[in-house]
Each structure stands twice: as structure tokens, then as C-alpha cells.
Image 1: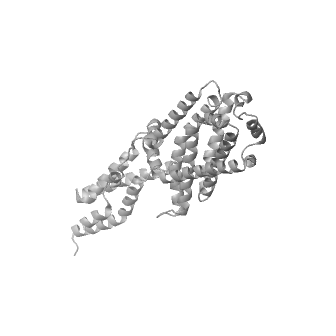
Image 2 (image 1 turned 180 degrees about the horizontal axis):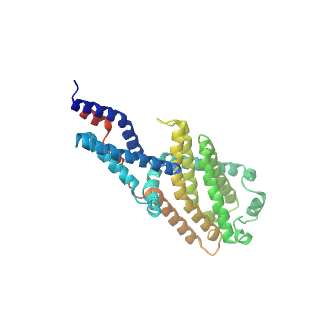
Image 3 (image 1 turned 120 degrees about the horizontal axis):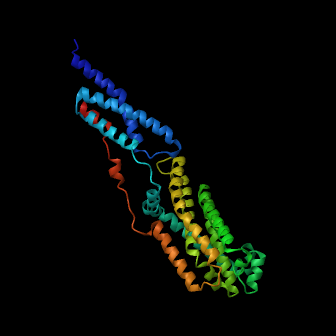
Length: 346
């Protein structure tokens, strides 16, 4: 005949079997980053699971006292409590964390793609320079006829920019164009990286061709003086966008242990952070190109200083300074897994 104690133990084991999956599900949910698109449904599910854990913890304490199962439930309860009662997100802190922690780590992670993007861009410059040096009649592939005529007359097309439109309108148009080129270089990475290769190579080719043609007419120095103020930041952002596009392409070609969709989503999410961090610098480059670069009031030394300083600040902000890493192992190891606990109990 079964004793009340043995019946209670059997009921407890049965209860553990039915509740274990729910505890593991809650534990996994607490370790996952929140999804902004399902914030309300996730909060609702967390609240329901939190109430269930309170009930389970109370029952476990009453039936078996401070056993490993009870301690596990207590840990789970505290985690859920902290998640539900955490303070509102602080946008200012997250903004600084983006530049101080997240972007530098991501830039370091994609350094090989960045070097590849730089190599492709430099090859494009070399190809453009060599082609126009040997066949100057092909400059029409890169420059418009009015621009060619100006150079042949000893003038740069940039000389009259401020006569055509005010600096404010010019800056806005330049910034919009820079953002378009950057987004295009990034998004076309979805074509297995081929679109990004084209954008990087073509931009390098056009730059090399323009310098080769102006050099033939003794204007390369003036073109360099125009570019030097905004070029370091502008070209750096385009290179980073190219590297991000190559990362997208690589996630489709070599997704690793994940499937292609998972790898593509994660890469898009990570590189999107870098894009957000770099966009303000594109606006800065547009302002410099609209107000300072075409203005003869600013001497070459001033433009050179502005270009070097903004370039240094850009790379310091986005990855060249000391990086702050989070100890992911300590976070991942928080809490106790159910399987060992149940083995101890049995």
C-alpha cells in the first residue's frame, strides 16, 4: 500500500515534468535580446511566465524546502523580476554606447573586409589613372563635356560652384548624394557582394581618371586642394559602406553554422549600427564641401588641417581608440541549467 509520502513524491515528479519545459522557455526568453517589433507581446508573455514562476516557487518551498530546484526557481524569479522592473531605456547612454563599445568592436570584426574594400578602391584609382593617361580621349566616360571644356581652358569645374548656388543648398545636395552612394554601396552587397565591388571600383576609377586628366592640364594640385578638406571623411565612409556590403555578400556566400537568412539578418543588423554611426560624418563632409572646399578664402593649409583633423576624429570615434569589451562569458553563464539540477534531485 502506497504511503502518503510516496504519493507526494510521485506527484512532485509529475509536476516537475510538466513544468520543466516552461521554466526552460522562460530562461531562454530572458537571455534573448528584446525584439522591438514584438515588444508588447513579449512583455505580456513574460508577465504570464513570471506569475507562474511565483506560484511554482511557492509550491516548491512548501513541499521540498531549499532544494536545488527551489534555488533554481528563485534565480529565475529574480531574473524575471529585474527584467520586468528595469528602468526605461536611456537614449543618451545608448548613443554613447554605440560609439564607445558597439561600433569599435564591429569595425574590428570587419577589418579584413575593410582592407579588401580599400584594395578594390585603390585598384580602381590605378585603372582610371592608367587608362586616361594612355587614352585621354576616353575622359568622356567619366566627365561631362562642359567639365572637359573647363579643364581644357585651364579651369576646374569646382571653381564656379559658389556662383551657381549658395553654400547651404550645395551642402544639402552633396550630403544627399553622399548618403545615396553610401547606401547603394551597402545595399548592393545583397547581390552576393558583386554590386558593392562595382560601386567601389567605379568610384575609384572615376577619381583616378579625373586626376589623370587634370594632371595633363596642370590642374591636379588644385583638384587635390579642393578634395583635401572633405575627402578624408567622405572617402572613409564610402570605404566602410563598401566593407559592410562585402560583409553582406559574405554572409550569403559563407553563412557558417547558420542558414543564409539568419546570417544575412544578423550581418544587416550589425552593419546597420555602423551606418547609423557614420551618417553624421557624411553630413559634416557635406558642410565642409559646400562651405569650405570651393571657397578661395580658405588657404590650402586650412583645408589640409580640417581634412586631417576630421579624418582623425572619424577613425578615433569609429574604431581606432581603446575598445571596451563586454565579458559575454560571464553573462552567458548566469543562472543554473535545469538538466544538472534534476540529476541531482533524482
